[in-house]
Length: 201
Image (tube, rainbow, N blue to C red; front, side, top):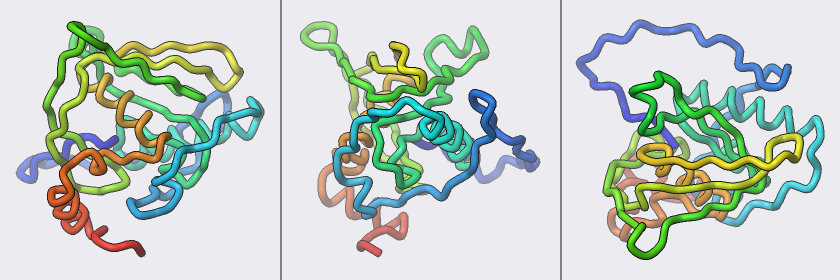
């Protein structure tokens, strides 16, 4: 999932990126997989080995997300068929705490509110795999994900606001769904055309 674009009239000083480290591993930046690439359009395989390769994958995903100025990234967005995502995303509490939620989840299971607890939030959404384009999309305003860390220990993330949207967006990716797939066909076609992704490459 991508951050909002910076206003064109703002002057932003370039910031040199520092290497991203995770569990003692330096992450390697990989190119972001674009819409129409087959790995983005099918469910990802469950992770069965919690080993050094998995630790390096998560390190690489954090580095790739950081390099692309994203707030979330799924493994298939760097071409890897595995049920893993990472986030570095503000939550509703971020304004008070000054801290984003930084986490990774292996084999995540998304839990959404139902019945009277379910409230939809209509807001702008973008994706690193459909660069530069955004569209309004309604999603539940809270979400929970359960799963495991790279050591196989259980983890739970509960989010509201942008984090709730991010958890849903990344979970969708692992099921082979890109956010534009949830839009009407005409709107999806316009967005893909604007992103230079109107036909498979």
